[in-house]
Image (cartoon, rainbow, N blue to C red; front, side, top):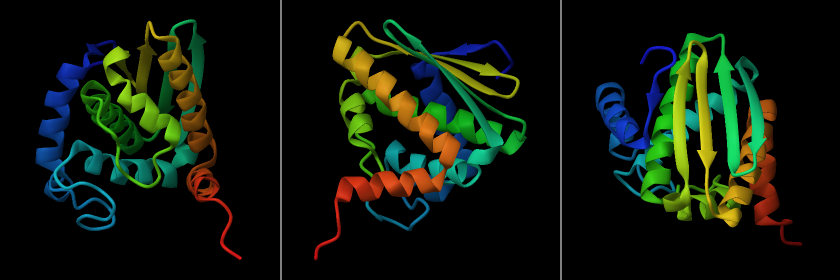
Length: 182
């Protein structure tokens, strides 16, 4: 897609389906990064998200992200000087767009409660995606105040992941699990 082109979630579905079919048959069939069925439903777009998230987290230092809080949502700009990361970012945005459009839970252990609640409210989210030369701009808005709060909270979570990578992901998972038993 060329710079300045806007893409709706419906167009993203076509792009993701073609991209997945051409680049990763294992992901299409739910094998993901940890093998078939490792905490993920089989044959879902959700299963395709985690390998990309892992790749982005392992290379978080190559990413730049800014978030603008809007009265009705957020505008995020995530970019990289690394062309592989740019492709990974665009793929991630497209696959998560499918989840938002379908109001489909990510259904993987690292997913935050905020993300799960946000995906349940996918029908109330308007999502506009623009590719830049070095990444992607995503504007997500809603007329529902609860959804707006969730969009803003999730944007802050993602910024923390971009800033700190896997360390932030692991800390968040450990916090949700609680302290180890005595």
